[in-house]
Length: 388
Image 1: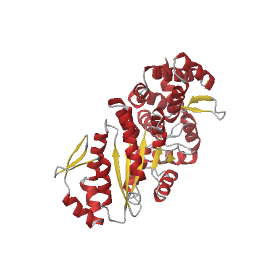
Image 2: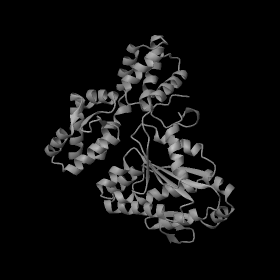
Image 3: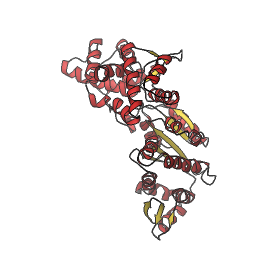
Image 4: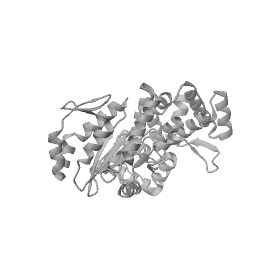
């Protein structure tokens, strides 16, 4: 298994996430449409790639990254392009003679702001064109359409068009999910590093996604993280005994693949520099220092706040993180007081805190009233590069 830091992986480089994959396939086979919930860097895209690369029998899987779509028009361009892509069409032709005949009859000329324009000049709205397309699938295989960064698309529509168009976009998707003609032919999977629940809550439109089956991608369990660390070490020349692995994982604490991969990468570099294969605690501390110096690997944590919130919201979120960084913890009461200082209403402040939790910045203690940084590594980086 190669150590690909910060990149979605597939094939032999994918660490099987058995629990998440089992939950996804159970939901798919139960007929649910899915909201795949995961903070950034947890490995959701790699999981979706695995669904695409190793589909169960009777399923054909399409993956689309919609992050750059700034309008409904652009979204449908991406979707229809994926559905007309040569490899995908080839798979469907193999199983569906009627679909092959259908493709010969149609010619999508362009995607317009009014809908899909065919070669004969006919213009059909997006949802109807999609429904007609899917209804032609007469194979015994169900289509799974995975839309990565879907929430970012919704936010883009709000930013570059308006909230009304974003709600219309979401209503179209809900109507497709509720369409009985499509129920046995297609499953939708929505995912993204921005929480779709937070986006729709800000629009007071939660009802537009309340039919989705929410599946969370969690950090690795401790035992799984140990096995993952060993597998990564096997791809390098470094050696780590059980005690050193324990120290490494204790320092990481929030056991997402990205942090483990990052430190193994840095330990491998240190090992070669020092000509020492057996890792000790001092080398782990040096690897952490080197990792945190790579600004490009962490700076998105700061830029995400600037992009995701208006000025008051950004300054509020930044101050909350600065205080938690300095004091280690912060109570809900003090957070509410800071919201008042920044002239934020209680609901908006709550949504900002929810976003910080969802995106992996902070987490609650068991008391449910006290927050701390989710990751000691992110806390160290924030302290060095933002708070001071």
